[in-house]
Every structure is written in C-alpha cells, then in structure tokens.
Length: 184
Ligand code: SF4
Ligand code: SF4
Ligand code: SF4
Image 1 (cartoon, rainbow, N blue to C red):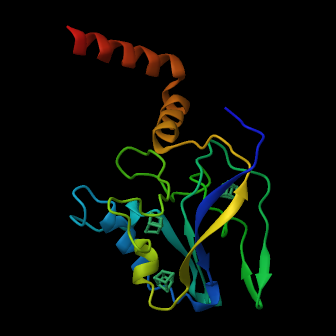
Image 2: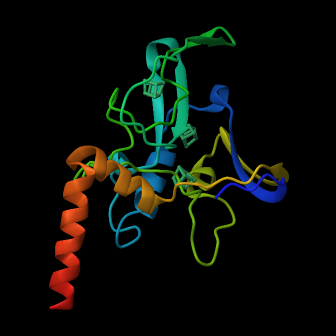
Image 3: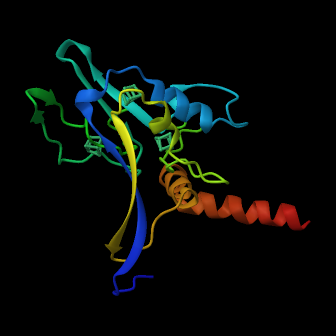
C-alpha cells in the first residue's frame, strides 16, 4: 500500500571510502560468520552480504553490500574514474544479478541481502563496520523525510527468486501440497 504523506524515518547508513580500503576482506569474513547458522559456526565469504571488488593491479578495492535481486542484467552499466582510479561497469552495484556470482546463497542459489546486521538486542554497529580497521566503512544513523513505500523483505525476495526459477504455478502447487500434508 502506498501512502502519499511523507514521514520521518531513522535510516542506517554505511559510508564507503574506497581509498581507505586495503582489500583485507575482514568485512566479508565477519559478515558470513555473523549470518552462519548457528551464528559464528563457519566463515564462508561466499555467504557474505558484502563483497570487496578487487583489482590489485590498479590498486582498486571497493566493498559493496548486497542489495536487490534482479532476474536479468541491466543496460545501465557505467565506468567511473575517481581519484584517477577506474571503477568498472558493475563495481558499484549491489544487485544479486545473473551477470556475476555475488550474493547468491551457494547451496540454494537464493539471493542474499544486507540486513544491516539486524539482531536482538541491536548491534551498536554492523559487523562489517566493526571489523574494518581502516575506516573504509563507517556507520551513521540519521532521521530523514521519506516517501512511504512497501519494502520487499527477505521472504518476498526468496519467493520471487523461487517463482522466477520454477514458475509461480509450481510454487503455489507445492505450498498447497505442503498445507494438505500438514493438515492430514
Ligand atoms: S574490512 Fe575494510 S579495509 Fe578490509 S576489505 Fe573490508 S572495507 Fe576494505
Ligand atoms: S551487476 Fe548490477 S550493474 Fe551489473 S548488470 Fe547486474 S544489475 Fe546491472
Ligand atoms: S551490514 Fe551486516 S549484513 Fe550488511 S554487509 Fe555489513 S555485516 Fe553484512
């Protein structure tokens, strides 16, 4: 449902300063450990929701966090030059996209999304920020005016991905069958 009245919202921001990043990948390890089940039981950067894009030859390191899921690659790819370093087409994009292997759960193929380390009790700072000793990642909270919108949660993302892979009809049939099995 979309409401046209702007409202105040506390937003969490992770600022990235690529010139400070040394490509140590501690953020990837910390993220994957924090999201392991059980928590901290394993470290596998392939399960991390942050990836450091590295081009060591050109001294380019850029951490990106997993954002939205897209079933198709886009046409809006750009090359940026910042402080004389060239960042290639998909470097700044956090999409779970068929163009590359990032941000897909290795076993299921389901898209991964940064949750800003949602936890109970809440973390003081997201894990990737806590372990970044170079201040390439810094955390901020601030209140902003936002246009309310419906955000796709992890459940919707997972269902959308399954529907794209197997078709909505198959998913609906499986859910109906599971419901019957539970009721019987
Ligand atoms: S922990 Fe910080 S310095 Fe290390 S790779 Fe991640 S962002 Fe870069
Ligand atoms: S990774 Fe991002 S920029 Fe690159 S093709 Fe996919 S959606 Fe487009
Ligand atoms: S904020 Fe948390 S979930 Fe997001 S990339 Fe950093 S460690 Fe991973």
